[in-house]
Image (spheres, rainbow, N blue to C red):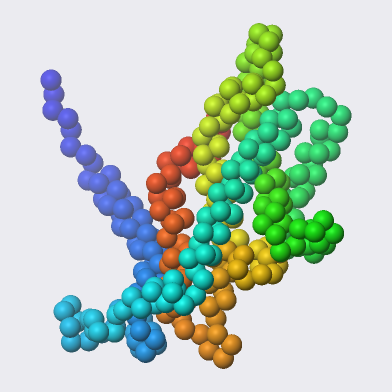
Length: 290
């Protein structure tokens, strides 16, 4: 058996060059997060005197006396960040689960049922997707006001559980991934539509469900404008609005704000790192299926 020939030096050089470029881009992407983490543990005086960690005579040339965790303690003792964090977890969990279920059901109906006006509804949904969300703030607030849902949790949750983007995304997933023959066979065997949806359709599009759960969770977690407008009581504000309220009237404690921002992005970053494989497989599922 002949020995495996050595790799082409040009191929190895190209691979090293590719890794160098990707590594440089990764460092460039992580640079803002590194700066934010350093800013969150610096004192206010050191915040303006150094870009990253403060320079000094300590170990590794760092002024360790200018680093502190006081900002994180203040967030949970002097400010309602803990309550806002629970609100964000509640909103993101309920909205992402509700949006995934309702969008999957709506996408299934648009993809696999024949009814009058289906094309018009699909066109309207697609048109809503391309509209800037800021254009809908005024009409949406007026509708919620007349329904008596302003300054309520339902006023934030109900508009978020049927997004047009999710409906259209699941419609495309159902068209590409769910064979109509399987549905017809299940109906012939006597299965009802609810049983077909939950026991056949949802398992087939499971990768898309995982991907959209992450998209909806992160989108709701980072939502700032809608809760700020709908929730007028500070005790109901989620984390994004609570961090915005850390700004002072005549000045801002930037280290405190950076600490709050770090608290806000840490949960979703961990969630994405844990579920990134499901996210990628969900977005690519059905891409090559007829």
